[in-house]
Amino acid sequence: MMYPYMVLADGTEITHSHIIDNNGTEQVEVHFERATEKGFDSARCVLPTYQWKFNEGFSTEEIHFFEEFLRHNAHLLYRYAAQGGISCA
Image 1 (cartoon, helix red, strand yellow):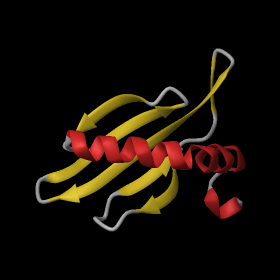
Image 2 (cartoon, one colour; image 1 turned 120 degrees about the vertical axis):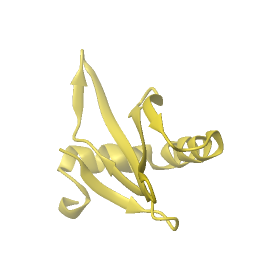
Image 3 (cartoon, helix red, strand yellow; image 1 turned 90 degrees about the vertical axis):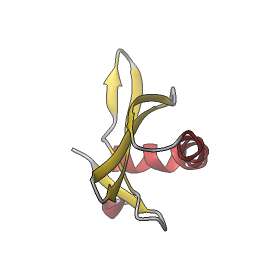
Image 4 (cartoon, helix red, strand yellow; image 1 turned 90 degrees about the horizontal axis):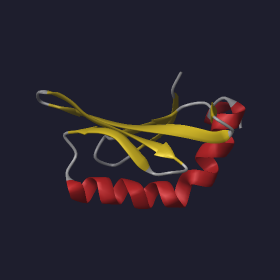
């Protein structure tokens, strides 16, 4: 399940997973999605490694912006992931 986190000014929606236990490492997957004329741009990053699982449609510059965004918001994303989303915080 993905929980809503934020919508950016350009309409990019950011959602996150619950805490995922990966061999003793707590991970959170963060998904970015934006509607386009042809469908959606989407990308997914795994915290804490900041490894991108996929990117379909976002530019390199946008991905760099998202990485910086994640570095500033990772602590909140982990907190909300542990609590079942921001509405439960």
